[in-house]
Length: 97
Image 1 (cartoon, rainbow, N blue to C red):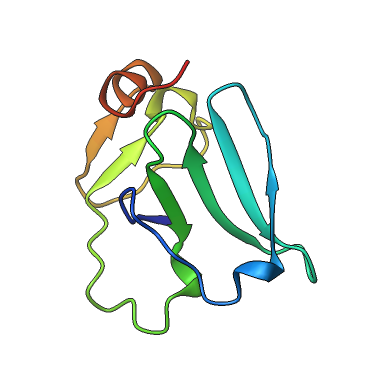
Image 2: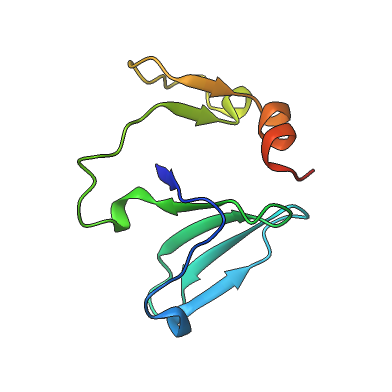
């Protein structure tokens, strides 16, 4: 689970981050001390999704959309209703590919 944090993101302790160039269109940020996943960022738009578990208070988050829905494993399905975006829809909205 990740929180869409937009394109203007700053980090406390940024010197502890390392960036992995995960594809032609995206990169991932990890803690270089423990390896924890911190964020996923689209290169073109700089749209940044931060791991939901990193926020102290996640009570205001609303699970309202899923991305790459056409790539999800068939063996799971969330019960609540969400806006579902395919890979093509994600790239059309945020850039990449």
